[in-house]
Length: 102
Image (cartoon, rainbow, N blue to C red; front, side, top):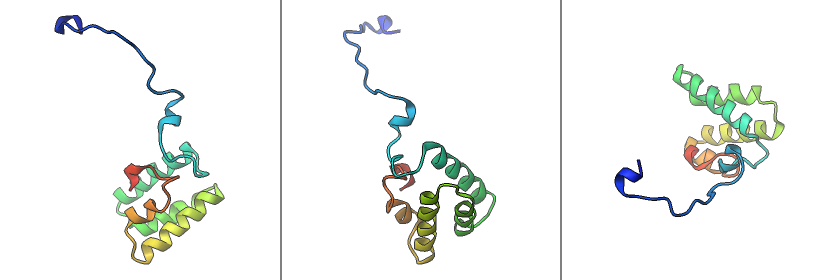
């Protein structure tokens, strides 16, 4: 394909090292990749099923096995209940929630 366009490879360098887990930003805040992905999956399922955001957060908070993550979800629920947007509540935890959550 490159040859058809009169292009040639002149240098190859490894740009990213580590596993795909290492390349996802924000997963260092005491919450594993798996925990964040499971939260995201079930949060989306609950919201798409018509469960209100606060109720969805509470359900997932109650089911969280990681004490630190449970506390974060509790604080997020409190912030949203107090009038903060979900965006701003996630933004308060940049070490847990990558930019696409905020």
